[in-house]
Length: 338
Image 1: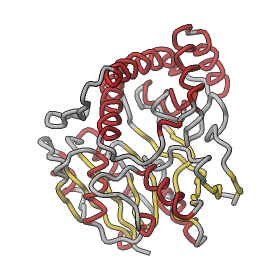
Image 2: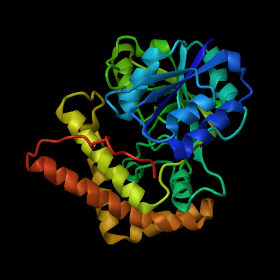
Image 3: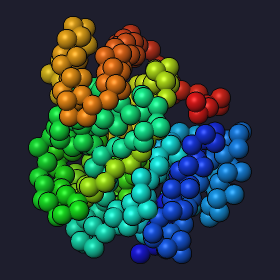
Image 4: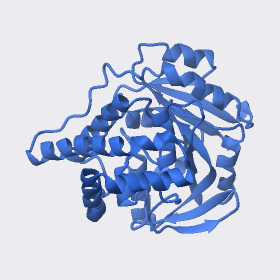
């Protein structure tokens, strides 16, 4: 079973070294996997770091987005198992890869994903907050469409997903009515999962799963009882920038009809509840207190400002769409990792 680890990059010098160092510490033999870097035109030391670490393949990503980088990397890769690892992901322990690969002994399992985000004591407070929340977008908490353990709810998802406990991992059966946003930050899958799906030139992981479910009726995935570090944001300003990118990219690709997952069917009541809770603040404070009781950390102080930022940025995006403005993705030409 040949494994290809695909890492899209763009000016990732601040995180790529730690990412690659954690991969090098894995117990899986180096002969059993390759590392593929899909570069979107880095102008810092990103490629130098990759070469020093002994990366096997460096390929170009002319379309620059992370989704395009996944496609470019997979096209250059040779493995029949693909691991999508972002440049700001750090594998938390040397057994991570071995544990993520173990469920593939079950022929029904087409993909695996860690069940949680984790963090280190030295990580920025905002990074720890998102790990505790279990998602990078607080709106998902209200729509119940998340896929990592949240200290607010004590669950890995708010959807009713058929689950079988296999010891070190959960065997879950995804369907059209129970499909959380699985597919990023340590998503490992059989290359055959892509067959018959629209994964070029942009690979939207949740769209791939949705298309397979539409075709086959279900998809079986393993949620492995481990975590992954995601150095998502160090400062609130980083989060504002990333939320703007998220909404603008979403509106653009939806406008271009390049998305298949039915985002328009998200729970409208959850969206309304998010808006009401953010305006009134008190429900957010209750959530933060619940999270603090389960996982004490001053990082919960970020819950209210993160929700306020999200409402503000998404509100402007929705207004732009309502006014009929043509959408465009965020320009990556000067993109820098903060």
